[in-house]
Length: 260
View 1 (cartoon, rainbow, N blue to C red):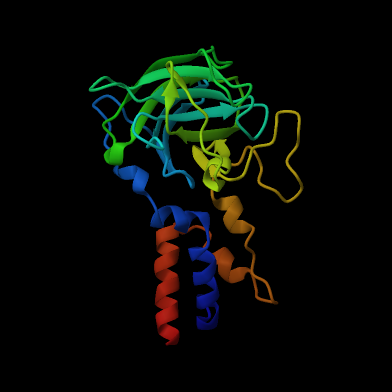
View 2 (cartoon, rainbow, N blue to C red; view 1 turned 60 degrees about the vertical axis):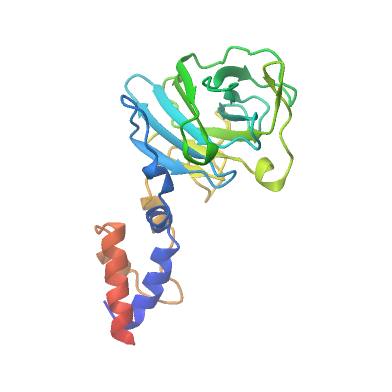
């Protein structure tokens, strides 16, 4: 590979989703109780939250652990899937309210139709194994559950939220700051990858041309979309296609140092 091409490759690699995840993997340090382990985790980009999950495609079951700190002591945290849209309305949510004293947080389910939540309601996705604890670092609550999803679901919109208080066992309205309103994204089940900030297409809508495919689940699509420009030959990029992200980064750094 020509030395002059190495700085460009370094920039492309550092900007790739793979490099971003390698540089930020705080969720991997979360220690769960015995018997709770998850295949994948993702640091969500808003509200200091993370999601841990295992998707069993053969059974269409999704086991999750959502980790976040309430906006204030005595508050609540929530995570859910929205098969109908990008926001809270229509979300099938798990909500955990901070327990009093040493009591474990209470988990409730909500089929959300608006911002005022009252009594708990059943979800469209059968939910089992619901539990929560307050053993997370920094006052975080960890919400556990298992959802039975429709057969063939490959991607679905996800939302998450935190609130400062609860009244009568129901969560009060959350703040409407920029982070609160941006706490949504896409959970890609096929390939066990999550992409926050890119809502999934609804079941009846096809992805926009050139946009992220709802059934995507690997970083190969994102990497291949960053083709060389300005008359550069694609052969150099093609020759590294079989290497892992760490190996590519190391190769790029060696090339960059060689040009100094």
